Every structure is written in C-alpha cells, then in structure tokens.
Length: 344
Image (cartoon, rainbow, N blue to C red):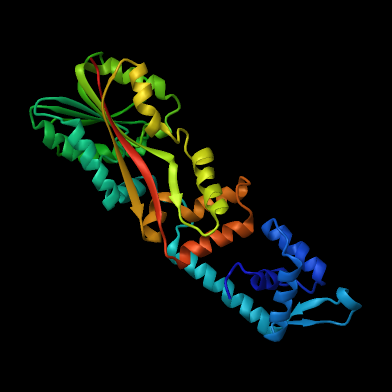
C-alpha cells in the first residue's frame, strides 16, 4: 500500500472513529484539499473490506457507518511508521545549523565545481587586496590567501556575528587575512581600495542588490574585478510524474523562499547599469541523482511543508511529492551563473 493512495486515505480518515461513506470523503477533503472520485472511493472501500481492514456497522443503506478493524488499525500504524522511517532517513525535517550547512555545501561535488570556476575567474594575484563578501564561516579564505600570497591581503566580510567568529578563527593562521563584521550595502572601507571582490550565493539574499553593486564599484580600484556566483532559481527542476505538483513546488521556492531568485540572470544587466564592463557569464548546472544529496541543498521536506502552508500544494499533493522522491528514481537540477565584471 502506498502512503498516499486512496486506501491509505480512507484508513487515515477512519482513525478517529466510524464514519459513513460521505463523511469519509469529507474527512479526506479536509486532509488533502480534494475529494476522491466516486469510483476511487467505492473501489478503495471494496478492497479494504476484502482485506478485512474495514467493516460496516448496522445502518440504513449508504449511510451505514464504516469502522477500522483491528487489522486495519494495525495496517495504518505500519504504514505511518514506514512513512516516518523513510522521511527520517531521507529528509531533514529541521533547519540545519547555518555554519554546518555552509560547510556541508562547500564539500559537495557540485559546489566545489563552481567554486573552482569562480576562483579561476577571480584571477587573484600575489600582492593584491581581495574582499570575500559574505565569507560565511571562512571556507574560502585559505584559497584566497594562497592566491595573493603573504604579499597580499584578504578581508572576509559577513553580517552574521556567528559566521564572523568562525571565519576569524580560520583567518588566524592565514598571513595577511582578517575578517570584518559589516554590511556589504555600506562598507567602512575607503574608495578604490580593493583589487578583487568575490561573492558566492550572497546577492540572492540581499535586501538591495543595486546598493551593493554601487558599493562594489566604489571600493574597487580602476581595473578591479568583481566575480559573483549566483543561482537562477527559476531554472530549478525536480522530476515528478505530475508536472503541476513539481512546478508548484519549484514556484513556491522561487516566489517565497529566496529574496532575489533570478539574480543570476539579472546580474550582467544590473552590473552594466552601475558602470561595470561585463567580461564573462559562465552557466554551471548542478545535477542531483541522489535524493539525500539534493535534500541537503534544497530542504525537500521543509520546503514542502512550507509550500502547503503557503497554499501552493495541498496536503495530498505534498504527500505524493515526497513519497515519489523517497521511492525514486530521483533527478533535480538548477543553474548558477558565474558572472565576471570589471570597473573601467
């Protein structure tokens, strides 16, 4: 029995006590947002009765109440237990620690791939001054410090005090490297002070991207370079047999979860408006074939619950979505753009 099929829905509707057929469908509609068709309901009732999982009580015609048998209650318990076990093993159900999340992402093959492209595009050289905007826990400070050598300087910048503390610990052993608690919208730095600015998955979260780009233009020296790696969440695709469900899930993430969901595609145009010359735009598509790996990035269970609360999915659709992802095969993809711009 699948956790979201008609039989399972009937058993769940009867968990709190006997109901007649019409009331069963009303309870299912409350749970899922949709009623079963007449044929689906009658077929499910017939199959469940044949298995000995439900029984009819005395009553008048179609209004005879239906109850769970002991076998039916046991079957419901097993199915719910199996669903909880699958969910617990495959999906994170709580928001992970921010620092642990960033470090976990940095270790994935997909993120390592575009980090290297970003580092190559940055082309930081010995003796230069590099700003790492949104440095997080300092995952990339070491690579930047090695690029500029002891002759150069690296300044990690983040607005989160916990991230700053973690990054400062890492910077302690890196020559010429320090970390600043600051807002990239308004930096306590002199104009024309930096050779390179690095930003990775930062602009998608900013309140005012134009202000940040203006600030980047201000602090960069003429000939200085900004390289940003930013996703386009409208490109997110998750395979599911029901395209409406899949599109509703991805639309919710782009509409409600990310502040600037399509900044990856917008960045070249916006940078040009603020006086930068666009040197290159490199698309990097991450493909996930394993549900656990995708869940670590996409928060599949958490964001499904949010999609239900926001009205993008019914409870029944959410169950169908997660059930399919858990049973596989799985495929998801999203494209990120590495954009390189220079101050004339």
